[in-house]
Length: 567
Image 1 (spheres, rainbow, N blue to C red):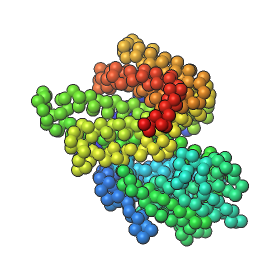
Image 2: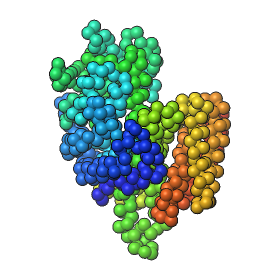
Image 3: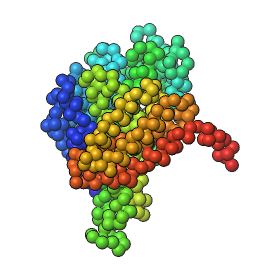
Image 4: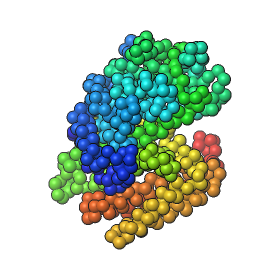
């Protein structure tokens, strides 16, 4: 079935749920009001539906290949990429100082969501560039900014991030890639990196790699790591791509999904690089890119879920099976209706969390208020982990709606799950996200979380007059989350880590209750009201079991020995 960008959903969430009005009330984003937002969403939706969506199956059936050292991309991907670049969608949030639009991250997030639903494998390319643009804006020298940012923003050049090595995955500090000073302000980069998304292509003029490496005087661990810009083609005196750098794509990985997105092993053999940021401060610079990418990857999961949902809904409306009333289609079966309602409710929750996260980022940039910065930081691991978990779960449920046909590749249902599965792994596994939430994001003693819970309870109180039972359920769930949060911050790190994943999931569940209740208040007695009732009565109660898991701590978990698991 044709993909259709859910523009009405973005409009509704931005205007009635995520607080986009606060963003456009600031001086910085005053021009990005409702009319401009509507025009942007409409135009981006048209591109996604007409240009990108038809490439979805191409990327899966004829994936990227490496031929004689050259990456050949899937049929139509070059044209699709040009449409993204020429539309200005790569540099939406980038500074106008270097050719960007300077638009709110909330709009960028919505556009990334719809691009992911249309063709996730291709969307990953501009997402990597967006992260690199932000890292360069914050950390690079003026010379590097002037040379690279206009090209990155226009889409003439693409960007990647190079962290992982065979022996250094989540433990980035174990990397072995070296950076030796050349004596002229440049560095010789030597080492191997793996899992490099879109490490090369056949449609951009240059590929710019941000590479983590260790200087000769770099101490062991993450504190001794520096960040370098290492282009595929070294810019000449006029800033145009010149001689080829000493780097190459060794091989492309054979993957479960995302066949259209080349994932490479990269080798640097004394490649020329330029320092980005201060020496030995590479992780701080890279985290700027990673945090941008984490929200973006969460959005990828949501987009994949949207595509899977639309695919399943169309099938359920058309497929006749069994003795049921109404149209006779399988959507009349209560269990199929349950699956579709769950899919839609979960997408709304994840999308609302991501857009609220983006609004917090925009408010932090526009106001400089530290409470918004803390809100954005708190929501980032939740956006990434919950968004991608929901991408996998909804895609799996979409296969189930199709029944036996979901297991047949020709229907296209399985591709959404195969493509989405890696989103829960890259840019920091979802386990790493939960560790970040209960560790670094709770270093304030739970203050940022408490402020957010205060707002949720205030919203529930305001809803009591029209949605009494639903409001009470959300209020009680929020209190339970608050009590567990207060307990959590008093525990040692072992007990925190043991319950980190269920804690993040419970937090997302409660946020979902809040956003669905807010939607019901904005559209009473309508479709969103009915969906809110479904979510709050049937899905929100899961928070209780999740929080019970959190409060068990680590003792019984770690008492299970490796021998027990091997028995």
